[in-house]
Length: 412
Length: 161
Ligand code: SF4
Image (cartoon, chains in turn brown, orange):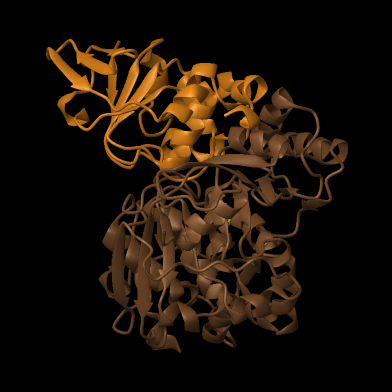
């Protein structure tokens, strides 16, 4: 029977010859991840099942959502997770980047099954792996057993062709897709991205595409590994799976990206997508560049090109949080961070930063932030009466420069 | 039991805003359910009340705080046209009953409703309506019957499926 890449990986991980959409599979997992916000509940679930993790090198804890701790409550949660890391002698404990970026840089290989207690674990699928976000109890169960149950998802194919115009990026492509299919358009489904646009895209851009699969309800985002993936992985090889030509998809979307304009998602749902021209000139108070969606080197580079040698608008805060320490150092070496700080940016440690409104730049009532992140839900960055507009790093930078939502093509 | 009616795409930031989820304490979580979106909810919700919603209930983050908060607030079940995937798993894993029902628009906020877990029926006593819900797949039902994933793994485990 012809299978999709997702079906093949789940069959392999559950020791079956094949599985089809709708089947239940109990799969071995290669890595289990939880972060500072979700680990405490997972640890509670874990200890009510057993007292020893299935493999101390495959359970990974990352402090990224509120690190360093901004409150006593946060510090107390950190203490609890630190004790778990020490008691279980885990080798993978990090405080220097967003969990998904660290998994991508250090762990995930093609063909892996990876579960994380964070919805954006779909990001890592850009390396040709099956990676998905789960809740804390599921993660506690996987820490204990090294396994997880899955209902094999139906797949959607997004065949992306052509080349984006100058000033238009993977973020604009995925926002436009989400605007078309809606916030529940891919509910429970595997989102497979193919086509020459994807082939030509950098690994960083592919990660941006897969990162937002969850914003249309998807179970996982996935892109077949190619030479570019292997080059990115350095020594990690994994097992490369590809979808059969005759594999069956619930729906196939043909998307030509050549005509696309820069896109924005307006408050307060990710599928409220419009071309940037629809809100050009709207005043902003804050601009945020970072996150597992768009906090990578190429994102910081794009923003730097727009801002270098200039000053951001008065009364606008520009906050930059590189997605990992490696990216932070690379951006430092390239001179990007210096240029951004000189332009008026505040550079934070490599973490989620203000993405969930707990520290490093929360919004008050009536403010608007343009952000390179993936969610614009009410209250996400602070006060529920603050607005979040999602956009590409280029649009974020151009808007910071002018103090208003701006079309980046006018500033490149 | 009172029906608490919600619309489509009720996300986890609406259910339990991220700024309030720096705790795993069930009682504290129960006090923040819908705190900004519907502040009257936690004040008035009674043991066994039912949340009735549209499509994609629980979308957004993977935070388990959301179903835990709903359950701890006393809600007996959530009925929706469809659920976001992670929320659905999480609710089953912690033993919050969920039902998929295509006709939730027929139920209004404040209606008196009753769910018969055995026959898979929701009765709207205010309107005199009986609506059907979809049964869970057997594997998931088994987890729910055990009271959640933790109990399932302790009693059955993956090796005995
Ligand atoms: S950067 Fe934002 S979206 Fe990504 S893992 Fe952190 S909080 Fe979640």
